[in-house]
Image 1 (cartoon, rainbow, N blue to C red):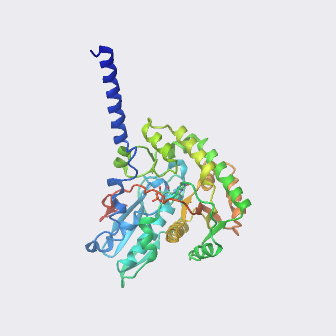
Image 2: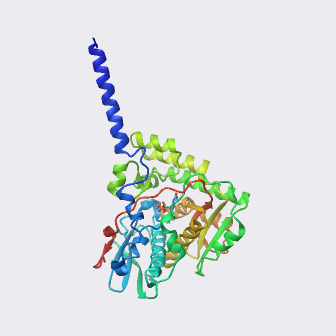
Image 3: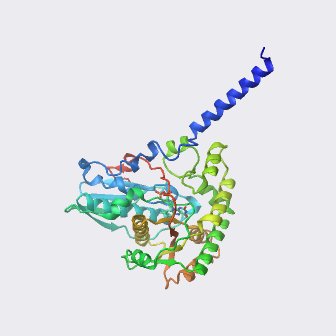
Length: 393
Ligand SMILES: Cc1cc2nc3c(=O)[nH]c(=O)nc-3n(C[C@H](O)[C@H](O)[C@H](O)COP(=O)(O)O)c2cc1C
């Protein structure tokens, strides 16, 4: 006869297995990026009856800081006004909302490529001005885009839009050819924006050390650490609710670490920071190319939009060429944080020296290379959530 103790033990065991099973399903431990939060990557071409709204399906797939998706689009009869949704900010991580402005530039770049394919010439008029410290959370217009009917054209970068993803994992030790870098350099068509590629081992090591030092600085700053942690999404439920933020699937961790991170109770900001620092040191500063996008004045609003457009163009082109990319913007985040606190800063000058910037300053640091596997998808909010037909201001 089965003893009472055995019955109780097997009951407890069954409950534990059921609990574990529930957690595995609830947190999407083995699921990877799938479900409604990723649907915009499949619906990215929109429908023929959507008129000038149609290119917005592509716009919302652009790169943007921490996947905050800080955009709103006001659609008129022949124009689209792009707003910065300032409430979706990174706080002390981006005190001037400079990265937000870069992300809006990325969305405008996608929009323009899609417009061409759907029979419009998109003419962008950026709103002039300078970014200021900790602006109010109200939406502000950043660009007016007139959508003039034109013959539909093929556009190779448009076709790369659904395949472009931020790759935070291991890059291969395979060099990128000089002629490829020259080609990428030729994509920068604004006189106020430049790109610097570092391929020399010594220069890359110095840039890597700067990125690691900035990461250490950020995680030692509780306000910055909390500002970032607000946008980290751990389990499936959180992703489905918010459809934004940096997910564990896309963080560039090993498959085992991803599994445990989802299975265990949510890590606090300190544990997340430690993973980030370790991954930065061991993986993310290693690539055949490190680089930076440079501008005359990183707080000039139109210049920041242009720099964002340049990054999106580079990343789309790199995707077409079979390359992968990751922004590593910690040093510039430190420049802004030091300016916010009125602290001395050495990162701005170090970046200028390393990139031989000719008086320009860095607004965006990145790595580029080849990887074994493609990068995972990040979630997106539905297009309906970011479109309005009446004004915001
Ligand atoms: C201005 C800007 C700064 C960014 N900084 C970083 C960064 O420092 N580290 C990083 O891993 N990704 C960074 N990203 C990439 C975003 O996190 C990424 O674009 C976003 O999560 C959406 O993912 P996706 O690019 O794969 O679509 C940055 C992107 C932009 C536009």
